[in-house]
Length: 409
Image 1 (cartoon, rainbow, N blue to C red):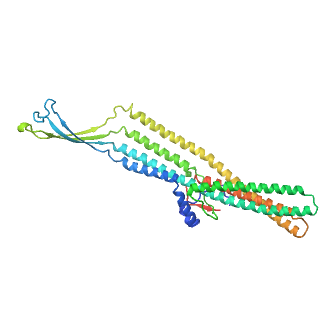
Image 2: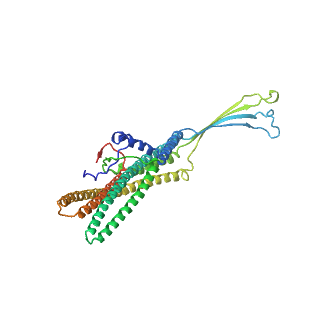
Image 3: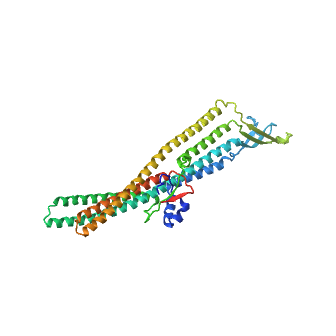
C-alpha cells in the first residue's frame, strides 16, 4: 500500500459491472449523457461528416442561352452563326487539395474525440470525488452527533460534582462552548452537504445512493505521453501538419471542363445549310502569382505547425510540474493518514486503559469522556484526510489515459 507514489486512474466503464455493480454503472451511464460530453461528441460527428464531404466534387453548372443573335432582328432566321446554347460546366479541384482538406477534418475529429474522452474522464473524477465528499460529510456529522452525546454525559458528570460541592463551574462553561462548536460544525457540514448534492444533481440529475465506494486505481508509468492534455497538444500538431499539406496543395493545378451544345437555326425557308455545333473545353490553373498568393499562405501554415510544436513542448513542461505537485501532495496526504491512524491507535489503547482504571475506581469519569471526544475529533480528521487523498488522486487520474494494469486499495 505504500507504493502510492505511482499515479493511478479509475477503471472506466469496461470494469464497472464487475467492480461496482449495476447501481454505479447506471449512474455513470447518466454521466455519459452530460451536455459537456454530448456537445463534444456532436462536434466530432460534424467533423466526420465534413471529412466525408471534402473528397466530393463541387456541383456542376448547367447553362442555357443564345449565341450571335443580331440586335436589329433577333428572329433566328437571317444569320448562319445564330444558335441556341445548352451547356455543362464542372470544376475539378485537385485531388491533393481535397485529400489535405479531408485530413484536416479527420485530424480535428481525432482531437475532438480525445477531448470527449478527456471530458468524460474529468467528469467521472469529479463524480467520484463528490461521492467521497458526501460520504465524508455524513461520517463527520455522525462523529459530531456522538460528541454531543458525550458532552451531555460530561455535563451531567459536572452537575453531579457541583451538587457534591466541587467548585467546577468553569468546566461547565467550557462544555457549553464545546457544544456550541459542535453545533456550528454540524451547520457547516449541512451547508457543505447541500452544495455537494447540488453539484451531483448538475452532473447526473439526481443524488446517487451509494453506501460504499471502492477505490480502483490504474498505475501510471510516469510517461507524460499518457496524459490527455499532452496527447491533445500532440494531436494539434497533426492538425497543423494537415494544414501545411493543404497550403502546399495550392501549388497544384485545379481543373475544369465546359461542354457546350449549340443548336443552329436553319433560317427562313431552310436557307442555312449546316449542322449543330459542339464545343468542349478543359481548364487548368497555373500558379503564376505563387509568390504573392500560395507562398505566404504556406509560410503561415508552417508557422502554425511550429506554434503547435511549441505548445506541445510547453504542455510537457507544464504537466511535468503539475504531476510532480499532485504526486507530492498525494504522498504527503498518505503520510498524514498514516500518522493520524497511528495516533488513533495509541489514543484507543489509552482510552481502554483509562476505562479499566475508571472501572477499578482509581480515576474519575471526566478524563475518559474527554479522551473519547478527542478521539472523535481525530477520527473526523482522518476521514477528512482520506477524502483529501481521494480528491488529489482523482484530480491526477482525470488527466491520465486508461491502461490495462490497475491496483485496488
